[in-house]
Structures are given as structure tokens and as C-alpha cells.
Amino acid sequence: METSFLELRCKEVVNVLDGRRLGHIVDMVLDLPSGQMLGFVVPGEKTFWNVFKGGSQLFIPFGCIVKIGEDTILVQLGGQAPNPYILSNDNKK
Image 1: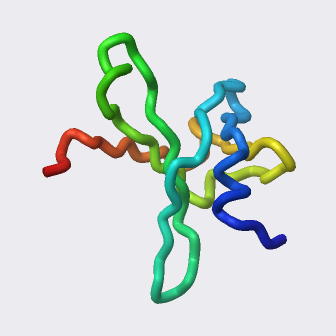
Image 2 (image 1 turned 90 degrees about the horizontal axis):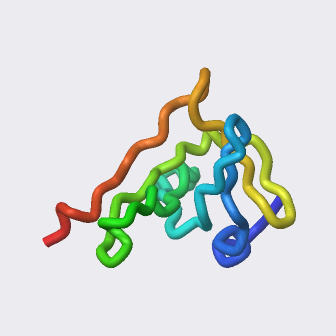
């Protein structure tokens, strides 16, 4: 299946274990020498205190993707799946 980043950005990411909506893809991580996709980045949890500033983001490894559908990307986070990584925007200079 071939798809573009613009098409993937329009799809909502949902965790199949708890049904939680994680948002839409904001970035993809690629390994340029091998041409492989390592995973993608979605917005982190929104709280009352970080609504107005750039909060953390969640990196979801490619191995956590269960299914890419027409409107939704299903991922498995938690349980036996590898843990996602939290990326912080606080370290930007």
C-alpha cells in the first residue's frame, strides 16, 4: 500500500487497548540511509496548564501500528507492545 504523508496526517490515531484518541500525526521519523519509517509523532496529553504553550509529544514506534484504515490509524500502546517515547519541546533553544 502506498500513501503520502499528507494522507496520513488526516487520519486520527487511536489506541486499540483503551480506545483513547491520540490525535493526528504531526511528524514522521525516517531512517534516511535505509529508507525505513521508524515511527510517527502525535501531540502529547493536553492539560489545563499546557494548553497555551507547546507541550510534550508522543513518538509511536512503527512496531506499534496495528492497522492503517481509511480514516483511522490503530496502534497498540501498553500491554506487551513497546512503550511510546515522550518527546519534550521544553529543550528547544
